[in-house]
Image 1 (cartoon, rainbow, N blue to C red):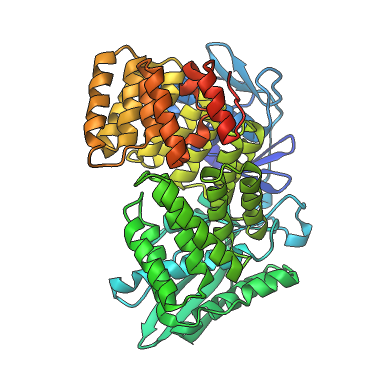
Image 2 (cartoon, rainbow, N blue to C red):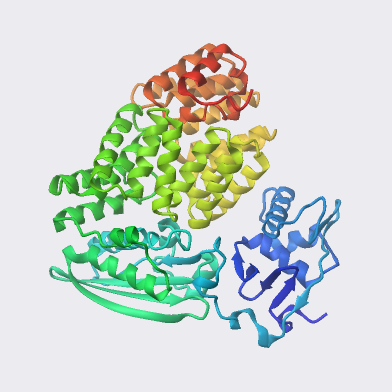
Amino acid sequence: MLPLERQSDVRRFGTFEVDLRARELRKGGIRIRLQDQPFEILALMLDRPGELLTREELRQRLWPDGTFVDFEHSLNAAVKRLRAALGDDADNPRFVETLHRRGYRFVAAVGADSPARHLHAVPLRSVQQRPEVASVRLVVLPFANLSNDAAQEYFSDGLTEEMITQISRLSPGRLGVIARTSSMLFKRSMKSACEIARELAVDYLLEGSVRFDGDRIRITAQLIEARNETHLWAETYDRRMEETLVMQSEVAARIAHSLAMELVPDQREALDRVAPRRNDAYQAYLKGRYHWNRSGDEGLEPALGFYERAIELDPRFAAAYAALARAKVSVALYSREPGRRPLEDARAAALCALELDPGLPDAHVALAEVRKSLEWNWPLAEAAYRTAIALSPSCETAHRSLGILLASLGRFPEAKVEADRACDLDPLCLTVNTGAAWVRYVAGEFDETIDRCQYTLDMDPGFTSARRLLGVAYLEAGRPELALVELDAAAAQDGTPLSLAWLAHAQAVGGRADEARALVARLDILARTTYVPPYHLAIAQVGLGNRDIAFDLLKKASAERDPALTSIGVDPRLEPLRRDRRYSGLTAEIGIPTVRA
């Protein structure tokens, strides 16, 4: 057999084709997302179809320097992801056969294209030729700040986010727009358009720059076809600052025309919305967005201040009300204080936003969170999330949050669809990937949870939410020592009451009751000066077997509207309480089904 580099780069099997150089898997001309390790396994198999690939060979190829923690699990997970992408069945394989304790073998017939038929020479099909379920995918890259003034960074970042919002409304169901978090990872990147497109699985890229000149602003924008880095168009806009939103609508409409997408009247109306009446209000709003998008909750306080300032300057600024509502929800979600008051504030701001502009997805998302965590009105919460998605199908937050809601109701297959759609829209977002892992965790799919958390931590080992979840997944999977390693690390990383409470629960379950009691005592002292969410304290007490204390804390969580309480019906750690009448009383009060009994 010829060495890999001397063969054609394209392999075909069944209805699939693989471009080994571009590292792309396609089915019927549509790109299928496949992560690096599963793709590496597939490439090896296609190079040696019908031959045994031993587990040791795969280990040396995937982890040549020996840097892995749990090789067997990681390899099994990578093969599982490959099978999922191919629609294959381990019990009745069409492509990947498992040879017990030995390795794997590719069992389908494989053909290679001649170099003249390289996949990149095949024209990208137009929008009209794509199947109804397919989407053209586009990423808005971070607009470059050419002003040599770091103080203006908020504007270029805010412009990027607003462009994503505008373009996401272009053609629901036909245009998928990569969300902000994944887009912003390429800020100041030296990667080529093709490289970025391959990582995000997109067809087109919009990039641009911003330069200030007194009270005027010059914005350039260009649309690039990723396949061969063709510049479809480029435009320069000289505007006054207050005309920025009008410019965004012009760019969005130009993209729609370039991609041959027809806009229905309500979408045209959305794109034609005018800017706020006051430019200073818009600037305050963009500064709020800049701080809102800082990691964790570190930018939450300044974001709240800027949103409130924007509303003070322009009391009819609907987007500022929607952003304020989202930020107030985050105050509750980050357990900065008891949830009831910030959720009530969020409801008021969201309703103001929707009265001014019913077409704002962010306002519907915020209202959905209020319906869920404050009012416990599950049908209205679901309806609000779905309205947000109908208005902006590329809104990864709505998909992720709807997935978590559906999981809380025990509707796991639907929940996984929504969570995975969020990952597709924001593939490099740590929060989105951890949300998908949480859905698997409460569904009882602990190996899949572990796999997804490890994938997230590969992107950022310091992301505490994924490390916490990895720890509790190990615990439920019967691996308490690994659980304690991860939860110890999470508590050391952030020292939050939530991390300490989860660690205490794991210590108690893992046979270290004295350490758990000491940690609970530490939390009791901490509660004198810091808000300690009662739901998570209840989790720790369940681990120690203190049911009466746990129920008292869950009642407190109910009174305070602790958002975490919405997981009471599915959280595996509450299993010891489920046969107690007090538990069924609580779930009945919240109106949530008891999924685990």
